[in-house]
Structure formats: structure tokens, C-alpha cells
Image (tube, one colour):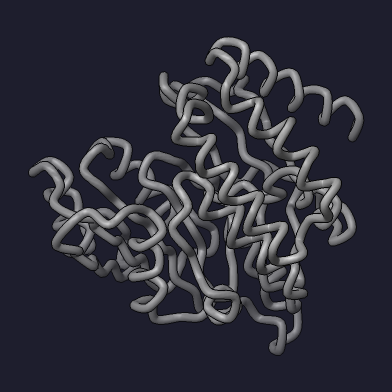
Length: 286
């Protein structure tokens, strides 16, 4: 790698709110700092409103450097809970570097994550995702792997019907995120809407096929993908994408029928359908 292509300095942006668990947050922090082959230049924790004392203790320990082996940690404490989109926007306005890696408070980044993704940023990519693996217990190594299309052509093709990035895995240019309007409130779909605008605007994007993040799946994971709350978000998302020219009229109609219908089926059916679709994608790629 030439000097010109040396990995840029970068921040990890990690939001925390009252429902997160202290033990999971500690593990998440060590995974993006102590465990990394290429550690970040800072971690910015965004405390989205008041949190229990157990979580506040982790934030204090992180600020002191006791958890991160010298990687600087700053905590942005928001006085009230504002939701994920606003918390991330506040974080993006506060990070020290333009290159930003996302991390969630209960996920685990594998040691090669940043040493794999940051050289791609150095080569000119502005949005870099990766495969993720679902897990319930950290010792479990058999969880479902969720891969996304690697090429720009594949990303654009997938974009018309689903989110072509695994949000907890992405590294991006904060200035490019701001240029398309940043994270915008859209309950549980703010990431899809952001990435749709970024790709539509012409950012250079790629997905790494290797698993670089382990994604913790809780008991309510599939329930959260459905119901009237998600249906409202789905309808709003599809209307915005149609108005923006991201999807055609026929794609809009298809998405309303398929994606909105998926939100209304019973949770066990949704879980079976989701896992079946993921395995079918893997078989086709294989």
C-alpha cells in the first residue's frame, strides 16, 4: 500500500440508550479497540438520554481509558432520549474524523474488521459494508450469515427492493452522509433510507464478503420487523423512494405488496420466511 493509500484516521460512532446491557457494551467496546488489528483513532459514545447506573459506569470506565487500551473515548451525553437517527446525527456533528465506522452497543466486531475496511476507504470507496453473522450466545459459531452484494451493479439492483448494507458493519464518509441530508427519522429504517440516498447520489460503495461483525439477535428480533409500527415506516419509506426517483412506479407497487405484506404476517411466519430467503440468496451466490 502506498503512502497515499494509507488508511485514514477514523472514529467509531457507537450510540447507547437505556435498554442496552452493560456487559454487552463492555464487550462491544473492547471488540472495536483492544481486539482490533487496526484500532480507531477515537471512539465517540453517544448516550441517548439517561441510562441506568450500570451503563453509566461503563461510560465512565471507557472515558478513563480502562477499557480501550489507550484508544481515546469521548462520551456525548444527550439530556433526553431522541431516537437513533437524531443520536447518530448528533454524533456525526461531533466526531473528530471524516471517516466513521458504525458499531452497536451489543454487537462484536472481529479483529480484522478495520484492517480490511479502512484500506478500501483509502482507495476511494465512500461506503463500505461487510457480511455479518447472527448470534445469541457468543460461543455460538453457527449463526446465520447475512451477506450483501459486493459490486455497485449488485448494490443498485438490490436497493430497489431491500437494504443492500448491514448497518452495524458500515464504514463511511461523514461528509458524504451529510451531503444527502444525513440520518432522518424513519422508525427502524433510517439506515435503508440513508443508504438509498447515498447510492442514488453516486457514492462509491462496496460490501466485503467476509464476516467482520457478529450481530446479536435478541428474543424479539423478528417481532420488531413487523406490526403496524413497521408498516407505517415501510409505507413512508416507499413513498420517499418513489418521490426521489430511487424506485420506478412498478417497483413501488411491488414493494408495497411484498414488503408491506411481510410486516403484517405473524412473527413465526416472518422468521421462517426471512431465514428461508437468506439461505436461498446464499445458495444462488454459491
